[in-house]
Structures are given as C-alpha cells and as structure tokens.
Amino acid sequence: MAQLVTRVDEALMREVDELVAQGAASSRSDLVRMGLERIIDEHRRQRTGRQIAEAYRRSPETPAELEGLDVTTRSLINEEPW
Image (cartoon, rainbow, N blue to C red; front, top):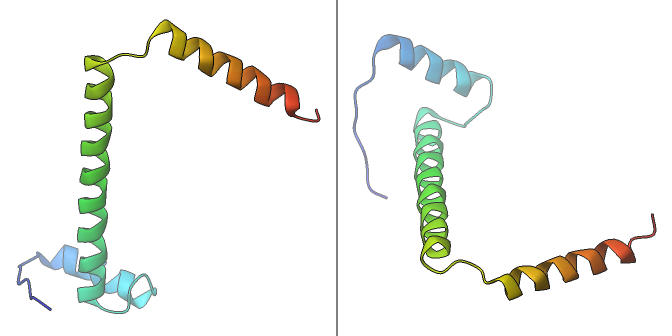
C-alpha cells in the first residue's frame, strides 16, 4: 500500500486523536483514509450529477416520454392499497 505523508496543525491532530479515541476509526491512518475516500466519493457523485444534468440539457425528455412517466406513476399509485 502506498504511503501519504502530510503535516497538520496541533488542533487538527487533537481532533483526529479524539475521533480515534471515540472509535470513529481504528487509527489516525484509518481516519485519514476514510476522510479521503469520502471526499473522493463526494466529488465523483457531484461530477456524475453534473454529467446527467448536462445530458438532459443536450437532449431533454420529449412530451411523449413525460406523458409515459405520468401514466406509469398514476398506475403505480392506483395499485397501492391505501
């Protein structure tokens, strides 16, 4: 596994140590790894969302497609026992 060396200020290190002591992660390295994974995942999701939105801007749904969705939605609601 590759290593990443970084410097943090004392206040941040105390926060990291506190989270590890509370069981949020098994070690400092584990906590940093978890944080990096979350940031990467968040950026990936945002990028995917932007790509989907751009695709809909380039090729919006047609009225027929929207009507089909409305029909399907009404059908699903009508099937509910309430």
